[in-house]
Length: 363
Image 1 (cartoon, rainbow, N blue to C red):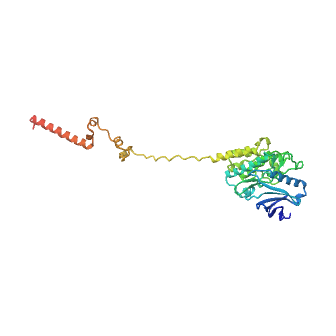
Image 2 (image 1 turned 135 degrees about the vertical axis):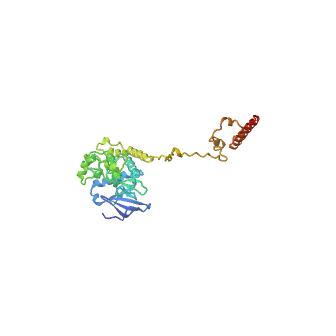
């Protein structure tokens, strides 16, 4: 397909890629903003169903108003070729983020998952099944915001754009009922979302076969391998949630992605509130003394102006006086006064003895 220089009021600046539809970086010459312009190729124009699906995607996406869904500004035809105009996204696809290992830690991965889950739940509430949930269709912009893209094979109630028995979707992310060509419900997107979460958290796909037939066989018959989730230290409630989303039995999957996102956010809150245990204070060293090395404790000196350490506190650690001495006036209870009193008593007794001996004429 030759790159046009202009489509309506949109000036083409750069080819970005694509398959049956090519995507260009363009400029709205009236509003002056950068946009992404998607246009069906000439080869795809030869298939009436491909053209009808492209126009249905444009109508479906243009009715979406959600912060995590790419905005469609305009759509129409130019020289008979359908095109749609979307917001121009910077950043990287979830596929590139997984490949380049730029998703960050568990908390950021779960934030990305909840944004994607809310977007998918939004379209389910509007009776739309995306049918192609995969990392390539989830974009992470420079602020960390997730954008759900590409409604190319989305299906609304009452709209049939596939032939009987025709299977559309990316093999690794297809639910068993989708592989078997059975009528789809939003549970097919829930299954695919579980596979995407598994790959985000482990870095590997749960299905590893190299051919489409073997991929389909694993999807239909093989149970999910939880070992990579355990090795990645994914919290057990999140592992259990992924197992439930990817079970083979539709009725055993969660009823909707709203309850899935609520559970993820609950686990995130628990993980943030995990507090490391506070270490106990170190015990004071135990000093052992031998019986022959016991030292008397020093008597605390009264601190000036401090009633807690004063004369009363000092007296409490002084030795108690005999009862007879405690009856003396307090000024005579000091050590000096007691010594003088003792000496005086001795002199008095000696003088009495001397006088007695003189009286008895013994000296």
